[in-house]
Length: 287
Image 1 (cartoon, helix red, strand yellow):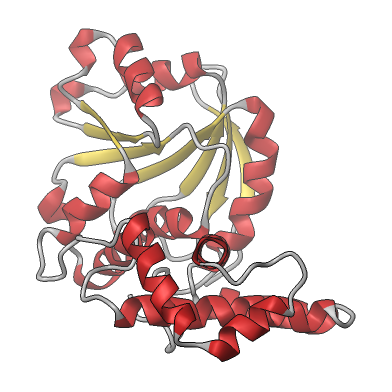
Image 2 (cartoon, rainbow, N blue to C red):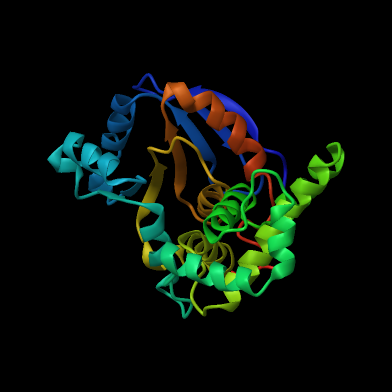
């Protein structure tokens, strides 16, 4: 895959400044749109519903959903569906045998406590790292943070290890240990259940389903545009899912952010997108 190249354009008829990341091999571009809420509402209403063009708006929390529903003209609601990534991912997986049922946080903490009780070596390794506790809550926080940064993709995991080797001791050792312990605890969780370990794993499975099985059109026919809104930060699993849709379908995929966070997202998304086969994981991780 070629490296994404940011280019700037202005949407016709609006004041939205668009920073677009051009992804090699995609039918459409994954783009970041920097603007205010008025720009978003205006762009959503510009789509011609008479042509049966559907739009999906993914908002992370109910507050964002209610705000959008309140501000959109009633005439637009037939062509615009407001949902979230979790629901869309579950919809993608509903076409196959790989169901989207996952462990909740309480189940994960219970499984991690059992794993830690049976692994003296892991508890000792954790205790040797400053600022980390050998508790289920601490390990779950570590696991979710590593997953958020890497999505357990081979390229990102290798990058983590490369960066660790370049840092001085003992930070180099501790940084590598944090990654290895996270992977081992991910393995322990996967061994404890036939379900997806977390909602993030559901999104990752859906990413692979879009990339490999071409299921998007079966679940969301007629969708011409997908807009992701309301995130203060973007995780690797979310970016991989959006990347897969942009690369494998004819859907225009946009990440909409406000001017205060636009520069941060533009700087972060480009290197995160630049991996081949989004949704792929290292051999040690299932799911």
